[in-house]
Amino acid sequence: MTLKEKFAEKILVPLANQGFYINWDKVENCEKIADEFAIEFADWIRVCKLKGRPYNFDNIKELLEIYKDEKDL
Image (cartoon, rainbow, N blue to C red; front, side, top):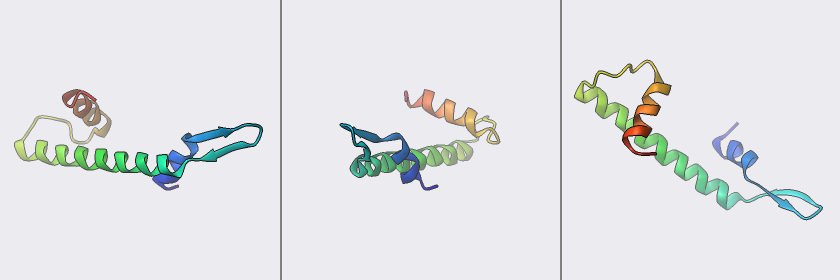
């Protein structure tokens, strides 16, 4: 399943008595935000390794929490 498809599942807009439709503009915006976040996170990990920070680089979830704390996200 693509990232767009995963977001599409979450961004369903209800139609009166007609079910739902997907707002593809919102999906594409979410995908761009997710891509930017992933790139920034990967770059942060790269810089941490270069600086020799004492993080457990095998625990990605822990690194993500540290990153979010440092960036106030």
